Image: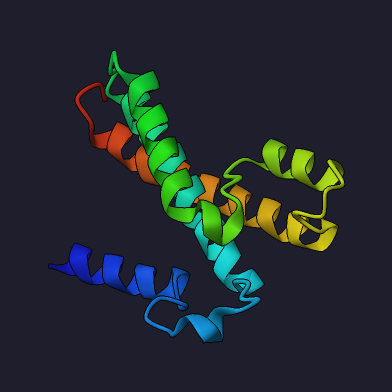
Length: 134
């Protein structure tokens, strides 16, 4: 029940335009905070998925990572561009197509680094208590 409530709150935070009439959405662009939250969620889920698969020595790490990435890109791509990786963000900023300003790029990279670190700490707790702990 708590997971469903958290998902509903995250949806409302990431998709504030849902439920509004189409005429109100002309020129709508998510705020930087919303875009950074999307990057945080996507990066956290991706890093946590890979970390847990490695911790559990899963033979399907690549499949799980690909599924997590595809899901996050589908769900959050229209919110933030779905970079989920500082190298991708740097490439988009340096690409010069106006899809991500340098200031937004810095915010994205800081958000992605924070999300990756928190996901690392989370799966480290699983590793410490997991089946392969000493």
